[in-house]
Image: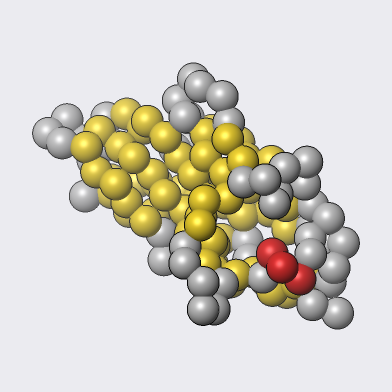
Length: 119
């Protein structure tokens, strides 16, 4: 099993910044990709950003130039720095980790953290 613990959500004014963190623990041999998704009320869950192990990052067009994804492999942690936030960024943000446990690959999700951008 792989457990994910997210932190860093909250309420911020338009133009402000937040930093999300997601720490993975459990029977992890290696982590392939780590990413962030979001889901706003009435919408489907969508990709925000993904960072493969050793590969190039990928961002949704709507967040390019404003959000930065990074990872600390020693801590099995992924971060999402969100700058110049807009009301449209309001959503529940979910961490996703694709990990190899030595037996199988697991596609794990965090519990979600609310990000609200409002004045």
